[in-house]
Image (tube, rainbow, N blue to C red; front, side, top):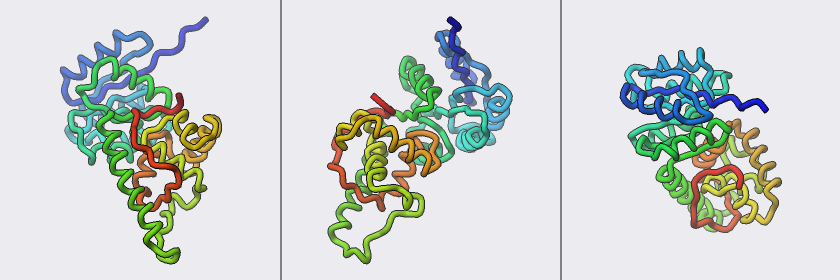
Length: 249
């Protein structure tokens, strides 16, 4: 039986010492291989085009072209490379800008090595992943939006209630419910239990959401939900807990 191809990882960070440490970690892990190092965003774009990595570990602050613009350019190409932003700065502006640029995930540099290696595999599989602290803030802000939307549904007349924005106009009521629960960090299994449907049905709804919203993964679905959250009418019961992002069980 043939061994699966290793996950190809490109390292982009302006700190040479950190790049070296990451390379040692990646190359010493079965199933992973480092295919290049970049100290600038521009170099990361060049290497992504030349080496066709599966995953790019991308710093945000680099000289010249920053990691956000490099992410945008890499994700705009049809190489299939996924970007995992890895940074010291746990700032909302970086999170939102990075996800809008097409990044599939966002982790802090103090993430334990085992968690980072697991994240690389998750991103390579086409799923989205955020640091727990980032997920908590996204959920908190999204919940504030949806609670406001629910309140205005009762305090406004039908004539002056806000309609969904253009991006969300094509969604069914059930798809909006699923989008809300995805944004709150629930897995497919948890969404299925919450809505009393099968996981296969949830996966179908998520597939429709990805297609309708032009999203690559759950990370981009959350951005769409966040940006349209104040206009979403949520009929499902509120979710008080949260969990790290996962796409299925």
